[in-house]
Structures are given as C-alpha cells and as structure tokens.
Length: 490
Ligand code: NAD
Image: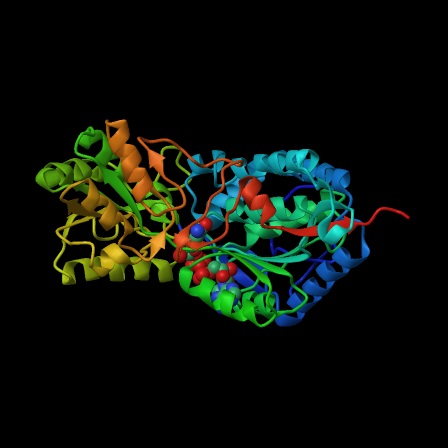
C-alpha cells in the first residue's frame, strides 16, 4: 500500500474507508496557500454511525478484555506507520506547515514510536490488585480491585501538533481497552485520515475499534460530547472550547479529560547567565511559529537588568527568520491559516495600543509573498496586566516583563488564568527549588531540561485543563476501577 497520491481522504467507520456524506473539503498548505487536496466532509449522520460502531465494538467484542491482542495490534500499528514515515512526513509538513526538523520528534516520529510505550504498558500494568481478606461487619471477605476500560472514548483534537495529540489519545485509550471515535481539527484532516487508512488496511485492529471522522463542522465535536453512548471525552484545544465541551458532557455525566491553553512564564533569576537564558527563551517561542500550548510566551527578567535582557532577547530573535518549513534549518514556519494570522496580527496591534514597544518583528516577512507567516516578535514595555501578557496568542510572540525579586517573579508567573508549563533559569539550587515550588503549573523545565517523553504526565493547573496525558497517569485516565468482594464459599 502507498499513501500517495491522495485525491481525497476517507472516513474510517466500522472498519471501512468510506467517503464523507457531505462530499469533500479543500486542504490548504499554510506555507504556500495552495490547495493540496481534499478531505472527506463527515456529517452528523456519519458521526452517528461512528459512535454506533464504537459502541458495538466495545459491547460485543473481546477487545477490552484481550490485553495481549491489544498490545500486538499497537506494535503492528507502530511498525506499519514506521514503514510509511517518509510519506507521512511529506504530508505532515504540507498540511500542518510543520518545520521538517520537528517531524523527527513531536510532529511525527516521536508519537509513532510512543505506540511501543503504550503496548509495553498493556503488558506490564497491574490490571488486578489483591487487597487480601478482611472481615468488614464481621463477614470474612476476599477483596480484589480490577482495572477496566471506560468504554467509548470521543477524542477531539486541534491542528498544531496533530500526530502528537491524536496518538497521545489513541495510544492510551486503545491500550486501556476502549474503542475510539476521533474527530481531528478541520485544518489537519489528512494527518488523522492517513492513520485511519493504515489501521484499516495494515493492522488487525477490529472493525469499530477506531473510527475517524474528518469534517469542517465543529458541531461534530459537540455531538460527540453530548451523545450518551460516549463514556469519556478526551479533548485538546482552546480553553473556551474546553468549557463548552464540559458543559455539553455534563448532561450525560461522562468523564471529561481536558488539555487546554497556556501562557507560561520563562523566569530568569538574577544569578543566571542572562544572555544564554534570554536567547533560549527567544528561540523556544519561535518553534513551529509559537503554535504550541506549552511554549513559554512571557519572559520574566530582573528589573535592574531589563534593558540588558531586552537587548539579548532581541538579538537572538532577530536571528530567527520565519521561512519554508521544508528547509532543514527552519524552526519558525507559517501559522496554520489566514484566520490564525489575523488573530496574531490583532494582538500585535493591541500590544502597541496598550503602550508596548515592538522591539523586533511585528509584521509579515517582506521576503515571503505567500504563506501565513508572521515575523518572530518581541514586545517590551508592558506589565503583566496587559491583554498581550494575559491572553494566549498562539504565534511567535514573546512579551518581556520585569520583576523585583524572586517572590515577585513567582507572583507574576502565577498571575494568569493558565498553569500549563514554564521554565526557570538560575544558578542557585535552593532558589530554583523555591521558585519551582511556588509556580502553579503542570510542567516546568529547569535550566533547559526537557519534560517531553512518553512516560511523563503532561497537563495543566487552573484553566489549562483537567487530568494528565501521557505516562501511567495518562493511561489511567482511560480506566475505570471495579472492586470485587467475595465471601468465602460455604
Ligand atoms: P479549538 O478549541 O478551536 O478546536 C479544537 C478542536 O475542538 C477542533 O477539533 C474543533 O473542531 C473542536 N471543536 C470546536 N468547537 C467545539 C465544540 N463546541 N464542541 C466540541 N468540539 C469542538 O482549538 P484550536 O484552535 O484547534 O487549537 C488551538 C488551541 O488548542 C490553543 O488554545 C492551544 O493552547 C490549545 N492546545 C492545547 C494543548 C494542550 O495539551 N494543553 C495542546 C495543543 C493545543
């Protein structure tokens, strides 16, 4: 089987690759603005069929109980995807605008390889725990705790790291024994649809266990969240949509797992190498044009070294150019769409209206005629109450803010509705630990440490989400707990 050329991708419903009932929709390469192909336009009726298939597969097959078979299927899927990695890479770069270098990591190769982690976890997990015998209310009783799949999982995902996020849901959900309906973002349907092709044609994953419905209609996500046959919603996207998903899921009281937005702080302590730290912050915010929820977009520096920090950050940022994602050296590609570029440009104007100064960047790169590119941009002269410092921009935009002392840095870092990630740079271990303990956030990097890994739980405090993705904690989001208490045979 070859994944190319693709005229129109298909839906995967009940083991079959089928056209969308709504026809097709165009996929645009964000680096060139040209149409690269068509995706299947799923409808509410298609989503209904997908939910029926997932429910039936869960209720009538041995998928949820056959641990060894699931581990085998996950390894088989990993191998099959590896055999198509070059085709998937080309399509991912074209559809997502992802810099090629990132496809060796979180944009493709990382999440595919992580399928082995989930398969190994199926083999090694303690599915049953013996609590021993006790005599509650005078009755001798043998007690066991069983871990079981939740049921049908509705997975709703965004466009920025489609493979990472699709597999961070499919991997543990399938490993745990659930069946899944995946609704990918309208901007990146192919990344999901091609995985559907591989599942249907190159694995033994039974019909109905994975269903993939691409569509431009956000209402299909809402349908998943509302349908009482779905037991759990695993959502990644904006905080605003996450709240809508939670409200929709409340009626049928389904489990809700949310990975949402962020406005993370990069704290440079006054004993750090300011130039090295600020250069790293400048580089990091430009990765994939700033379209990462966990990127640090507020740079906190000591007030008495503010000018020096602005100069160092500006110098580093001026050296990073937005450009062609297919070029091996590109870090900052395009934004995903004209709509997203409009949004980022609205914030650049707002930064000036709020009294800030654009130190570097602030517009579209003059040398690029096509594509939704925005220059890496540094905003100075604002405080943390500005909208530019409070709201998620999702572009290559860094706001540099002064603080007075370590406690003030912690206060500013926490003065945000979000709590997803962040960084601390410094020399003194005790001071670093105090700042780490003070910041309310789900992941923190110290002096450039990397938390991204299959076995590391990722997620947010406050309005950055509920629950954890990846790692054993991420696996257990997809499990129920059943207690069996047996009286001795008389
Ligand atoms: P979005 O919230 O607009 O859309 C995400 C998904 O939700 C899409 O598939 C969309 O079709 C669907 N959707 C839209 N309305 C819905 C509704 N009412 N009910 C159910 N589903 C609905 O987000 P986006 O613009 O695609 O992605 C960017 C956002 O995602 C940013 O805020 C970013 O921070 C966040 N994000 C978070 C993480 C994380 O792990 N915390 C990771 C990546 C992106």
